[in-house]
Amino acid sequence: METRPTGSVAAAQAVPGTARSPRRWWALIAIAASVLVVGLDLTVLNLALPSIAVSLHASTGDLQWFSDAYSLVIAALILPAGMLGDRYGRKKVLLLALVLFGVSSAACAYAASTGELIAARAVLGVGASAIFPLSLSVIPVMFGDEERQKAIALMAAATMLSFPIGPIVGGYLLDHFWWGSVFLINVPVVVLAVGAVAVLLPESRSSSRPRIDVAGVLVSSAGLIALTYGFIKAGQDGWTDPAALATIVAGVVLLVLFVLVERLVTARGAQPLVELPLFESPGFRWGTILVTLVSFAMFGLFFAMPQYFQDVRGANALGSGLRLLPMVAGMLVGMVAGTRLQAPRGSAAGGTAGPRTIIAAGYLIMAIAMALGAFTSLASSTGYALAWVAVAGLGTGLVMPAAMNISLGALSAERSGSGSAVIAAMRQVGSVIGVAVLGTVISNAYSSGVDVTGLPPAAGALARSSVAGGVTVARTIGSPTLLDSVRTAFIHGMDVMLWTCGGIAVGCAVLALLFLPRRQAGADAAAIDPASISV
View 1 (tube, one colour):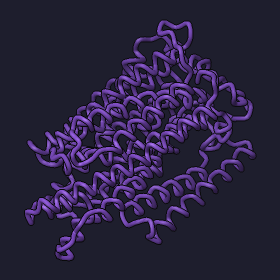
View 2 (cartoon, rainbow, N blue to C red; view 1 turned 90 degrees about the vertical axis):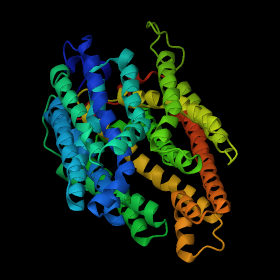
View 3 (cartoon, rainbow, N blue to C red; view 1 turned 120 degrees about the horizontal axis):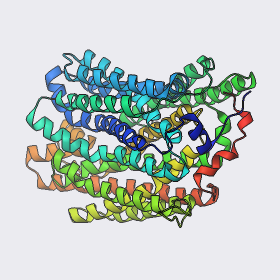
View 4 (cartoon, rainbow, N blue to C red; view 1 turned 60 degrees about the vertical axis):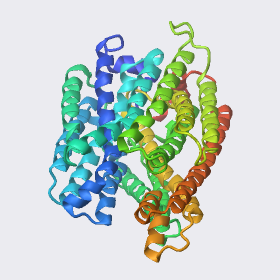
């Protein structure tokens, strides 16, 4: 086995001359634009579903598969995509992924049947599965310890901006053009990103090309697909659904088997898909867990708040997106403050706090925001919601770049692609589980709280199915009493969810204080024995 350099040393050796080149920031902006487009695609689809249903005569099952096909393909390919970047070149694979994403976006826009749209969405997921991890993998290669967190903050900002921008852009397009425009908008951004990446991004890859871990790819893909689909199905059909529970269990069993397979591959001296010794690094292990948990909590918030603004406060999709901007503003403030506080000592920014302190403080701020939000009532003003949502964004902005910096700081330039894919895969699964679990919390509290006394069975079932259904029934029959009951029940469900998220945030703050290393993230790569990983 050949030893490898770690940390920023590896980065400097991987791409000579790029450590101080100003082009690296322009290249990162181009990649951030790509991540923004992928994030937009996750948000604008839900806005377009009613129009798509009418135009393509789509059933409820078809509408579910428009989303599920995309998520399941990402789950299947996200780990192999990182490995391919390490093996064949991260720039090359990223360019192919961007081109594929652009072409499949155009195919989605002009799909003439539900089958065509589902297929195009699946291909779209192939491109996204590589863009997610490779956008992170270039950071340890191009940036040293002193700049890495700024680069991560830029990537995190692009991800978070997509959530309010999606409804804003999507709402405008759907008001003025046909439903396909929400996909077609991806194409010009992808074209610009492809040009910028081709010109500005240096190529980087592992110094060796080991054989592909076929067994690891197959078992990990099957496990992540089963786990993702199981939680999606549980969120749709309930947690007592036998098929959903069986699929979740099968996913867990397959992922345990995947760990055993990777140990066997490593014991034979071959290169595994995932280097399990990475998890021996406290920074990588706990940084990745804490990044995943913040995705869990925040995706629950992004699931609930648009419904609150639209169905309770009466905003349209565009207005809902605009009301999420304070959250993004809070995130940006948190990212800037966290980056300055955690800057290496002696640098121009003059850091004064370690990552453990910043992450714990960020989670506590998130917990305070969730607690404030949990006191929301039907009489609460929109301004009150905007205030606590902004505070939640501030906490998230402190946590995410700092935790991700710790995780990426444990990766060498040799295997940054596969390591970043592990982080991206856990965040992806965390977001799916977050929507399923926290969505169920809201749904159960809502359906048990809404009063449908006196309604016909069909109308009562629709009113209890969701807040949107309840608002529709109340307005159709002209019942202010039912409308108040529906909105009050949803707010109660949202409050229960926020208490849950607040509890998770407090627990994460405790985990950060107990288990995160005191040192800056860049030093943590030394915790991994270089000789234990073959390249």
